[in-house]
Image (cartoon, rainbow, N blue to C red; front, side, top):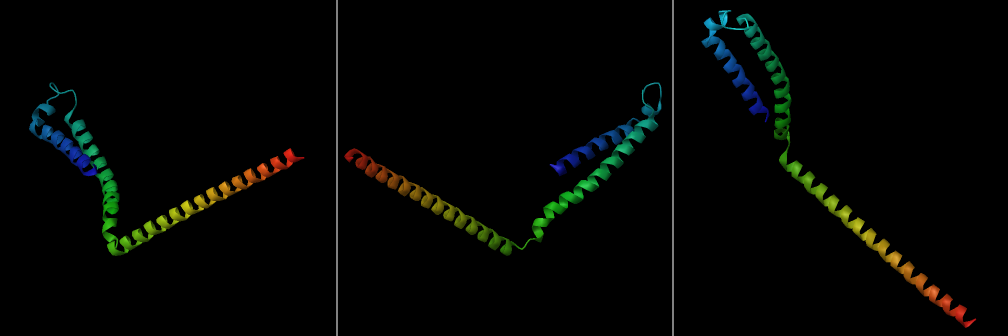
Amino acid sequence: YVISAIQLMQFGYAIAAAFLLIFWDDVLDVKFSSVQAKWFLIVLILCELAFNWIAAKILTRYTLCTSLGELVNKSILQETMAKFKLDEAVREREKKIQEEKDSNDAMTKAKENYVSSEATGKDRKST
């Protein structure tokens, strides 16, 4: 997107500059133009300078971000990614085992409570 935007802006400035070059005589004639030629030229130059300054700031960051991927050792990156994925899988498995253990403990407690309440209920009936 950045490159397309820069190309579009450059195209716009090229059209404005071409307009000045082609119609310079008409632009200089104050009778036919509402804007004096010097202001048209000054605005065009100032906008072009502002665009070039902004593009210089953006392009350095853009190329830096896209070039960082070239600086990475791909084999080490793949090893690191594989280790990360393995650690995540182990962590998920341990979490699942712990949840199953907690679930089994809760079931065992519920069963013990049920059995003890049944036994207590029978003791009360017999007294």
